[in-house]
Length: 456
Ligand SMILES: Nc1ncnc2c1ncn2[C@@H]1O[C@H](COP(=O)(O)OP(=O)(O)OP(=O)(O)O)[C@@H](O)[C@H]1O
Image 1: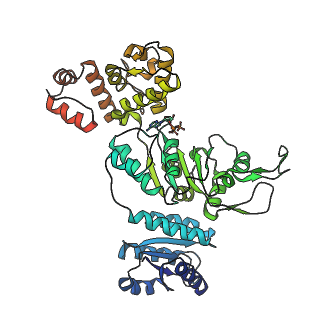
Image 2 (image 1 turned 60 degrees about the horizontal axis):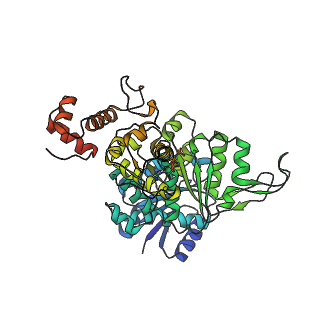
Image 3 (image 1 turned 180 degrees about the horizontal axis):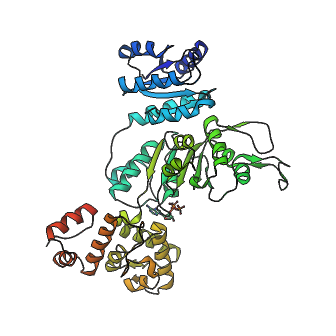
């Protein structure tokens, strides 16, 4: 049984938490100071500690932070959840940086607290690593997600593991890398799957629209509000809310979002009646939120609230081994839709597709395949069929170097190797010669980038 220790100098808080957690099946002890906790922990060996940051002797929270530092350094294996008031939420953010697993604001909601504890314990327990696609498919439902690149497999492993918990997930990655697909897969593999998956695109949304869209409004709340409207939070109740382009949200909306994520309550625009919801939140963005936090354009507390788990999807150019299976998958789907059962891609064309620079990632590859199918009368699609549908900017740079900042040196190296492989039809000696390296050095790089080859 998991053991919990509550550290709080308020007797009322101690008893109410103890009662709640015991009823939920945990073994619980309480103490009223960090010093007492230090005595107790070695013998009691709690799995998780709930630490109140605001001891009543002083309200700045400094005492609580000192306690957290002590606990992290002396008992690093114990999981810690912080309790804090709204006034000191910045301390909780500092606490997350020091290794606390989550923070809750007072007054806490019992079910929210229990959910947070269970999620954190669950995540700690299931650390088993699965490595092959086959194994993952036996355990989870990733039906529409194609790919075997190790970077993708490790992402699928993570989302499979966290899907059943209520942990918020932040998905980052360039446009078209499959963020929405991953969000859907998390929902699909969770116990919320029979409930709604609601998507909201926050890109370019104004502050008023944000409120009425997410929280709903009552009739007359503003000039155009002719009738009541249910917000997306309520629609997603007991399901999953997918907030796309979270990095585009303005600061005043960020604070409103933080409140509802903290308290799980909100008021529709124009209403004073609070509503409570049970929603799992998944966010996505192609922006760098950490950088935005340091520039002050994204709230740090919101950042910590939404990314208990974060996954970064690789760009398609970082997982070229999946290009062939993705293209084949799109053809297999489209041949049914367009009633052309004989459609396929020649192996030369599949190899050629792997040499393309596709800044629009999987979406661009999908569009290219579809356009080619629509415009080509042939059942076997060849390089020339694809070439007609791809604009110059999409193909590998021919003479000029790409813009600074668009590619790293390593990505450039990978592109040049792929281009040379394609040009010399995988003849290793010629490829090595054209790149000015030895065959041995080329093999090493082919291994590193996971480019298939046959030894000479
Ligand atoms: N691994 C994959 N297997 C099959 N199809 C995929 C895969 N990843 C993405 N796709 C397809 O590529 C298209 C783009 O994916 P998606 O919309 O999820 O990307 P995104 O990262 O959310 O893009 P944006 O940032 O522009 O919103 C979709 O049609 C999706 O079904």
